[in-house]
Image (cartoon, one colour):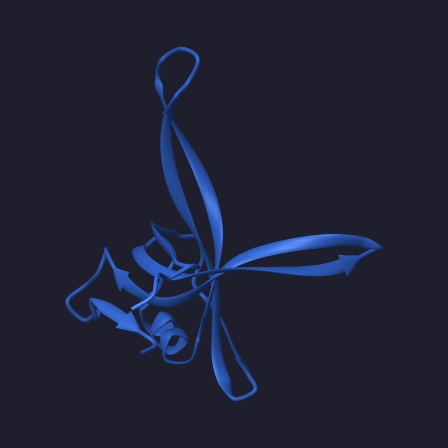
Length: 119
């Protein structure tokens, strides 16, 4: 088996319920998650730094995301990075998102499935 050259794994908290659409007959889910990193500041105190990540899911994974992923829940996900470019007002803009292949609910109830993948 070869090495995966574009693989991302994140654990974070969902910002808003997924936005659900259907494109070309396939379900699409879009949402964002916040991840935290900690470092020492100049006063030698721990400081939390949050980053937001744009997530997109397709097909079965999007269907499961619609059912299970809710604002404030913690999830672990695996996916791949994708950067798109577009022009607006004559300026080139970049948009980076993670296409989610699978996810696992970290905060879950007895009705939630533990792990979901598009495989």
